[in-house]
Structures are given as structure tokens and as C-alpha cells.
Length: 136
Image (cartoon, rainbow, N blue to C red; front, side):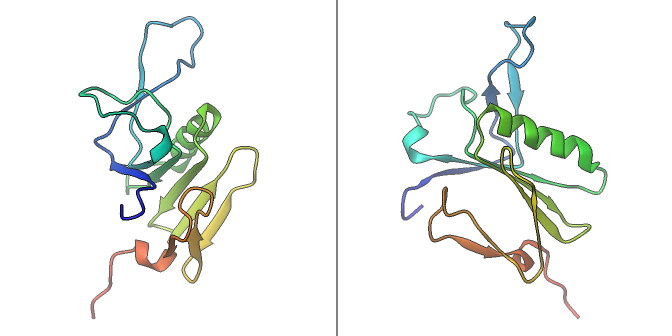
């Protein structure tokens, strides 16, 4: 926020994505990542409606009942439609996997640091900070 790079939103934000089904041009393709980021230069004045764009960054967090494959497919869809980075956080395996279009996924574990210099210059986060603290 201090550098006004863009806006981070939670799962309550809905994005209207471009139609992906050729035969259903009237249907709105509304999706909501767990966390998303849109660069400031792409933001318009806020309307009281869903946002009609694809976020630059989208994050999915695996819950206990989630299966990995549908989450990966959702990330791949956002990347095909224009997201720059997708991240899948898996608390069961203590990993964060970074996806980019046409690149092999990068799996980060405890001891690794997540950086996104093309979207958030100077920002970094230790993967170990993603997990709930353990108290003895």
C-alpha cells in the first residue's frame, strides 16, 4: 500500500473473466481466487459490481477437502486468460508452488523465500511465514 503498486483482495472479490465457451457468449464467467493482486495501472475507479478483468496474481489455498487437480486447473485457466503468476499454497505439504504460463512450476518449501519482482518489486516472504505458528 505505501508504494501504491496495486490492490490485494481476498476471496470476496469476484472477477468476470473473458468467455471461455464459444457457444455461450451471454454467460458470465465469474471466478474468485482466494487472494488476488491487480497492478495499479490496470485499476479503474471501483464500481459496485464484479471486476471485469483478470488479476495479475492469483492465489489458491488448499483446504483439507480440496483436491490439487481442480486448483491447478483453476490456476491454469487464469494464466491462459492473462494472469502473470498463480500460486498454489498447500498447507498439508508445507509448499507453495508458483505457476507462470508456459513455464515449469516452481515448488517452494520451508527455508525458501517467495519473491515476485515483476509484480511486487522489493517484496519477499519466507515460505515458513505462511503456516500457523506452533506453540509448545
